[in-house]
Length: 249
Image (cartoon, rainbow, N blue to C red; front, top):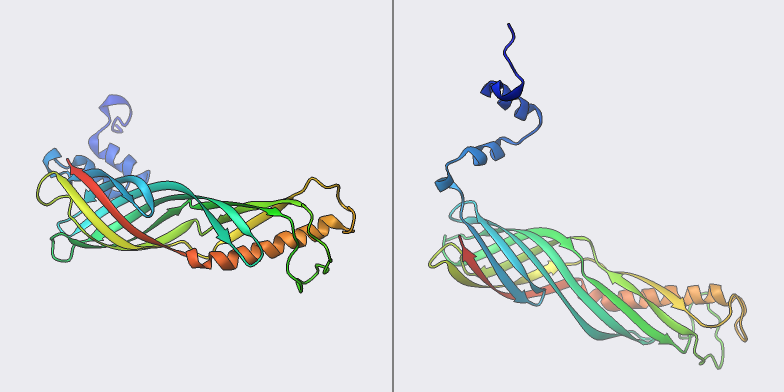
């Protein structure tokens, strides 16, 4: 007679076989069946710094190795200037990093390496009251081109998946349950990609003094994209200086 493998009478070995065939990791099974007292400590807290304001969730894998999820967000307004015009800019800093914290001496000093999601974005806009400087390929040199064409606007973004390298001082599992930590480092955001469009109140494709205006405005937007990308090359690396306060459970 075949063993009963259905309902509440299913043998334990059959249940394990089903779980194994479904792809459940052995590590997860070991963690789930471990005694409650053997569960790794967990710490949670808040952070604030140059990458924004956010939260930390830390798990202790061993005395010298912790796994940390750090999420931050912050927004501010600034001005970014190129060789042609000044852009009003709204910057939204956003990131979620998975970090491996290594404590070489099992003390407070740590080195953190990881990667994660980069949602940082810049919204830019500038009035379009003059054309590009002389010599732009495909764009004619038009004397007296100083009337209001509208607004050039768009977004600038870096890479979506980015690496991070940090060093810090503070161990959430040493001393009391409350722990203050400090860290510095950098998140590499990658080369910026700019996407701009021109919003104009004038009638296109042609308007006085500029035949084929739509094509020329597209050339102008492309030129502005290149100018902004060159200017934003200084922002490929985001410096990180932050403080965090955590509580261990």
